[in-house]
Structures are given as C-alpha cells and as structure tokens.
Amino acid sequence: MQIDKNAVLSGRAGPGPGSGIPGYVIYTRVGDEDLGRVTVCLAAQEHDIAAFVAEREEYDIAGRFSDREAGSGNAHDGLRQALCRCHETGAALLISRLDRLPIANMGLAPFFDDPQIALRVAVLPGASPDELRAHARLGEQERRCAASRAADNLRKSRSWSGAPETSAPDRTEQVARIALPMRENGATLHDIAMALNRAGLTTPRGSAWRPAQVSRILQRMT
Image (cartoon, rainbow, N blue to C red):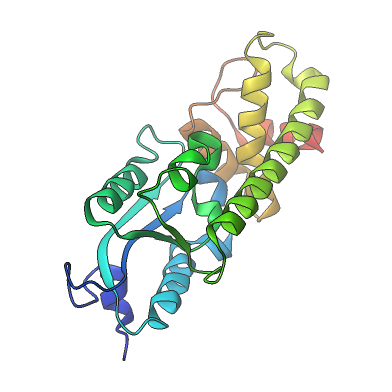
C-alpha cells in the first residue's frame, strides 16, 4: 500500500472510522526546553510517525493534536484532547518519542495505568507496554537528577541568595529543567531568557530574565 505522507500528517489517511483496522490518535509536542533539539522538532516527529504508519498496510487516523510552548498556561490542552479522542474511538495514542509525553507534569498514570489508553511510540515500534513504562520512568529519573544537581549548585551560589527559602527549591529546579537542555542543544542566552519568562519564572530579585542573568546562572549550575 502506497502511503501519502501529507495525508498521514493531516489526519486524512486510512479507510475511515468503524473499519475494524488499527486506529491512531497522533500527538506531537514541542516545548520551550526543546529549542535547538533537531530530533524533537515538529518535522522530525512527523517523519518518525509517518515512517511508523507507512509500515502498516491498513490503518485509520482518528485525530491529530499538538502542543507548543510548554511555558504557556494551556501547555497540555492538545494532549488532553488527544486522550479524550482515544477514549471516544478506542484508537491508540501514537507519539514519535517517549520524551514527548509531559511525564514531569502529568505523571505516568494517564499513559500507562488507564486501560482505555494504548500507547504506541514510533521510534520503539516493537516495545511492549511494560518496556515503554520502564523506559519512560528511567528517562524521567535521569532528567530529574540532572535538574536537581543543577539546582543544588545554584542554591549554593550567591546568585540565588535573595529568594525566599520556601520557594527557592521549586524555582531553581524549574529554571534548571528549562535552561540546561536548551543550552546543551545550542540555544542562545536570549532564547533561554525568553523561555524562562514565558514559563512565568523570575530571577532571584523577582525581575524578568535577561541574557546576562541567564549566563551567570548557567555558570553556577555546572
């Protein structure tokens, strides 16, 4: 069967609902922390998903949803709609990579404990649900450890000394979780400052982030 990639990505592919063939609800996500990461840009996610469905002779696309800019107030609305669509149609949730799921914010339960949600990952087509869960848990632990180490370094520095004690731990980890991946993937200081501001995070003095402040914070994280 010849697959039309444009049809796949627009949700028009497949013989239609009610055919009894495998159904997929496609979900893609790009957050502020993903800036500069070529492997998770929308084009890369769409390519992985198109390659996955191209290997299936028959399938139905039951819906297509996307989220952008994790710092926005409605960061995961697209995902919630995708999960609802899975419930309505019985289709599997299809993502390109496990790190497209916002597990840090929503936990594992919506994707692995809900009996009505079957998760498929395009780059891990043969993985069982238990294997996907183990991969997701380990990946999230790794990200949390990296952010925690960076936050510890930051809290020890004078740059964070003006922040209230009760809010500093949460804020420093949030800063680290956004700033570190972006810097490692080549984002500019200006881009990181904009991402932190979009996420509603402030400097220790309560002001908006600027490139020079981001530079100082990154130096103290490592």
